[in-house]
Length: 126
Image 1: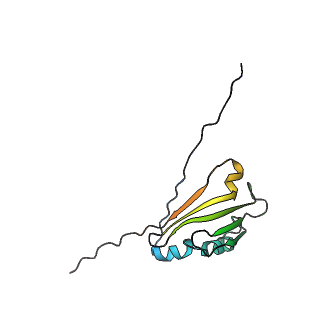
Image 2: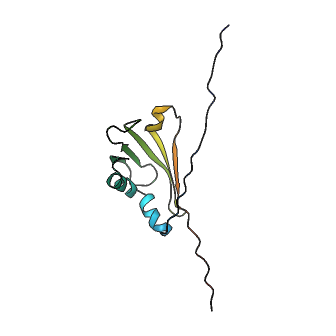
Image 3: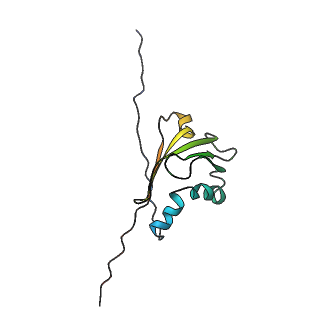
C-alpha cells in the first residue's frame, strides 16, 4: 500500500507598524519611489549592498535588482516589480519576481507599504 503525501498550500502575512513624527508626504517621498533603494545600501550596507534599476522610473512596472552583501544568509539577490503605486493614498505594492524568498519555497512574496496620515489634534479657539 502506497501513501501519497501532498503539501497543503500555505499562506501567511507579516505586519510591522512604525510611527514617526514626520509628515506623511515626507515619508512617502522616500518610500513611494526609488529613493529608498538609494538610501538603504548607504545607511544599512550590512542589510542590502546594492539596488539597481533594471527598468522603469519608480511608477508601476518598475523592476529593481536587489543584492545582499557577501556572506549574508539565504539568497544572493532578488528582483522586484512595482505593481501598485498610489501617490494619493501613499500605497505601494512590490512583487518579488525572482530570487529571495522564492528560492526558499515561497510561491508568491508581496510587500505592501502604506503610509498613514495621522490626524492632527483639533485646536480650540479661545
